[in-house]
Length: 253
Image (spheres, rainbow, N blue to C red):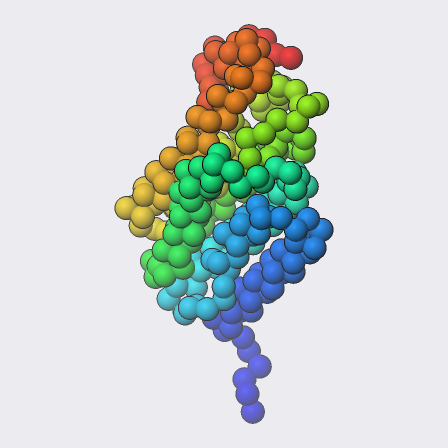
């Protein structure tokens, strides 16, 4: 008779398959609701590390963390893109392709690369490391959701385009940081990097992601200055790009 008891490896297999299937269902529904290139692109970035193959007893702790991270943050990102992306936003012109190469590619390389390095790691995970990774990851995820919610579906978008009714956001998190949603994602990616337990891979992943976001910020801020003129320049001068500027907040709208 087969032993009815489940081992840690059995439970791990169950959870990574469950996470994969849950995410696949969410992704499928998202495409049904709002089928567009950007949602497909974002969905695939988080789907790949969720593929439930390669789990062994030695790499199970970090593999499970990868599965948890990509399920949670993948669902967050897919939902955000379903809500905010408009069909006319993706033009596939020269500027769109530049953003794909300069902005998306380095971040995708970081997310997928760090995930697969962690999936292969057999380094033991202590309780302290588990708590650190989970805390940093959840903090970044919550901040990402808040930043997008406070900005609003009208203003948040992948392509650097501005809608007629869009206003310059300078309140809530945006009172202190010009790009809190990008700061939040860097915090999430830091959690991915710590999970690798590999200094070089972690540093390279963070550098790749930072390059992608900095590339995006360069063009986004040029567009914001063209759209809002002196109002944006005053706002930029009193706020930090990635984190609050000491003594910088003196007024808000």
